Image (tube, rainbow, N blue to C red):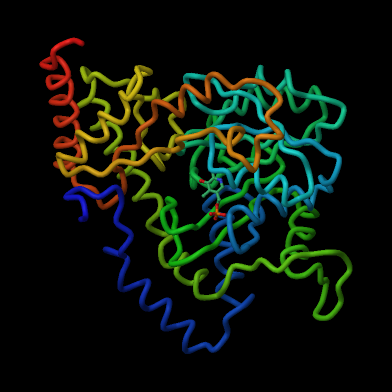
Length: 375
Ligand SMILES: *Cc1c(COP(=O)(O)O)cnc(C)c1O
């Protein structure tokens, strides 16, 4: 059964005619890999993101891994990241051959805590991979100071933060490079997989461009061990059709987030604070409280009201079987967040009335709780 208010709807809306025209254009061109659409998209995405270079790749995960490889971060090197993200953030570090090291999160922002990052620095540390979680930037000012003090590169995971800002600067441009995903649910989504790297460093851009295409400098001339991860022409054309709308879609997300905040002011849940006006609200996340099953009860209640919610993320990356061997300490703040977080529906196609309906359902949940006899 589909929910009356689904978490997200991915069918094209006002962009449909442009998306279809883009697909037709590529079909008619007969050119499908590394052609003019990718080149144009790279220029347009770099300009929109405030960077000098963009390189289209196959996925956001590949974007992170290729940036690390272009920086010569590999076996024996450590990269410090957050335990609260899509596991792909840490997986990309492993793909580069390096070792992920987790540092606990700041309990207010839910992004990596700079003080914890500094605690985890060793002589092997080469880079920090902050994740701009839910569309809000990590504390880049403090992280930059730490990176400078310890001679570390910052690689920004911007997969949830297209057009976001960190302390007034575009995400992906405070560190050496930023990685973006165009997975269909992201703020800028393709009709399949896609990703991009942005950077202001020309030599890093050249190296990443070579690495994504088999390590070739020119056709049939492979100068190093590369991979095959390219954004295809069809996805690039679709992204080009959508990119001009991204700014307006982002403003709709911000507007809906403001409505949620106002409507949830007295609700029995905690709304994550907006600590940076550059937040682009990939997700609107609330905390259900740390009592056992509080989150499950809230989600079940909303489900009965026809509202679909999701959890980003139910477990820390450091407690996943594939990553447990990299857990070098406890992560109480991330564990606590994993027990409490609930993502409410928020996307540019969501009606204002749906936001009010969801907020009012959460208010009724509180009343339902108070009516329950105490055990
Ligand atoms: C989506 C996402 C990724 C992975 O992107 P893919 O394109 O699916 O590989 C990595 N990090 C974060 C924070 C993400 O949200």
